[in-house]
Length: 217
Image (cartoon, rainbow, N blue to C red; front, side):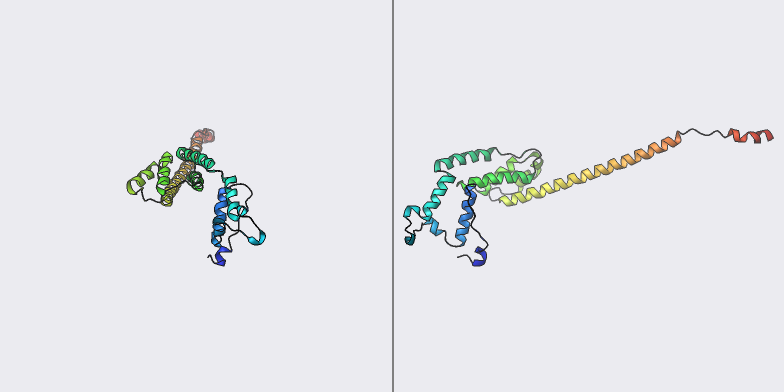
């Protein structure tokens, strides 16, 4: 049984009719942490309150599941729709890596809640074939140096994020260099214009000052 210090931090989530799958997973985790999930899984009748078997804790859980998660047929339709989303999802041009990975992960997590089996290999392959062109170099390196069959999703994500940071850093350095070059060019252009303006200024005629001297000569 979980210790009081660890389980005391877990509070039963309040279900308000939205996002049943997330609520059920969290609620199940809380009940297991207190070692009382068996009351839902096996059912529990309280003779003292004359609760009928069909109104047991297990029955209540099943009713919620059927009402908000849907019947087996409804779940099958949802899974099929999510499979289509998973297959056609691609990283958009200009989309941030974190945004795309979050979008793809959300689809995967939804499929898992409906019982769809998911191995790391399947997710890894999907990530590598659905990235934008700027990741072609690192994808090629992963394909050539890693064993896709055993490669973990988090390992791939770590490699991609490190590569993305280097790309962003390189782009920042290039931008800074461009600004410096532009600033230097503007400064040199201003200095050249100033010098040209001085050279084109009209020269003063000093002959008038030398007239008296010329007569004396």
